[in-house]
Amino acid sequence: MNYNTSLTKTDVTVTKKTNVRWIIVAILFFITVINYADRATMSIAGPVMAKALNFDSVAMGYLFSAFSWAYVACQIPGGWLLDRFGSKKVYVASIFFWSLFTMLQGFIGFFVGGVAVVILFSFRFLVGMSEAPSFPANSRIVAAWFPASERGTASAIFNSAQYAATVFFAPLMGWLVQNYGWEYVFWCMGSLGILYVFIWQKFIYNPNEHPMINEAEFQYISQGGALVNMDQGNKKEETTDRSKLDYVKDLLKNRMMLGIYIAQYCINAITYFFLTWFPVYLVQAKGMTILKAGFVAAIPAICGFIGGVLGGVISDYLLKKGYSLTFSRKAPIIIGLLLSMTMVFCNYVDVEWVVVSLMALSFFGKGLGALGWVVNSDTAPKQIVGLSGGILNTSGSLAGITTPIVIGYIIGTTGSFNGGLVYVVMHAFVAILSYLFIVGEIKRVELE
Image 1 (cartoon, rainbow, N blue to C red):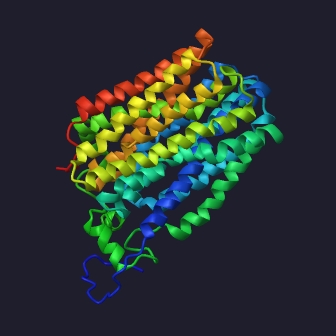
Image 2 (image 1 turned 90 degrees about the vertical axis):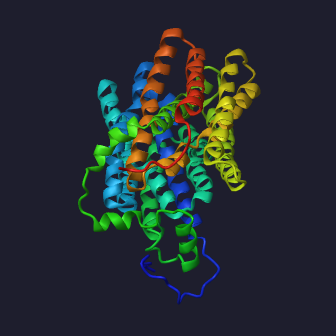
């Protein structure tokens, strides 16, 4: 069903709106679950793989970071591609290639020594390159499909997939490593992503092109502020007065956007600790088996998932109750980040259930405060939502480079994870300062 927004469509009598937008966000949620599970394959397979291939902690730190080098480098080009060619085409290519390169990592066992490190680093790099457009695309699709009053919940749903990935797949991957070998983790996850390409092609369309949407839902999201014609405009306009890449400098000069980007870097430092070193921490620092660590790692992830969804729901609730957009977005962020700092107390306890409880509370808080993508949908200039999302993701993903490497060096130098936890907690504190003193009022940036 194609909708031309120039028509009044007064002949349509359907009054009960469809809910296609929630199908769309469900599709985003599940592909983002696979996305993050593919990133986490190294953290689950890592301890056994490192022993089999003789990788030390520094080598593992660099391998953990390989994904993020490419992911960071390709964010702005990926955002530009999304704004130029649309979310559906760019995203489906992204899914296929990141899944293919994930699958190929299962064959690293045929190599040894430095050759294995170089090839594995290359495959992880290619996964990062392929995944680069994914979160900016999620942000664009939510901006196109959801009114402002539901955008916080929708963004929180797809963002919470990073925690659900651990819940759904960490036990499975731990079981595969324990019973079949680390190679099967990569083969299983890569195959699953390739199968998802067919689901994506069937269900994802622009709002004015989707065969399942009716007039009532289209008008509801359009009148509520959804950017329903985002990709349609790109098809009609081959050139613009300024290259969209020229606007990068403008966004970085905007104090509000700069504060958001700084905070995103700091928040993602917490994310990448859980994605990379956390299972290794449970094995090496707390003496758990890899199978037990796979299941235990799911507990904080469940709490992070609950916090992630709750943060968006609370934010939208505050907005509907008449609070300002600024207060509605900032309140869950600051409260959540304060809770995330509780992980530092794990340095002073050894009882497993206490460690897991503190990590669960920390991850819950991080989820509650992870509203950066909601804020991007609220603030990005409507012409360059993808590009702004690319800058946001570049900022956040820089933490994916620095965090694994710095923690690797801390462990290698001190023989302990204690300094690593302090390093992560300090990032939460800086993110709070950024939202309190740099961001200021949250509002949409208008291009000149």
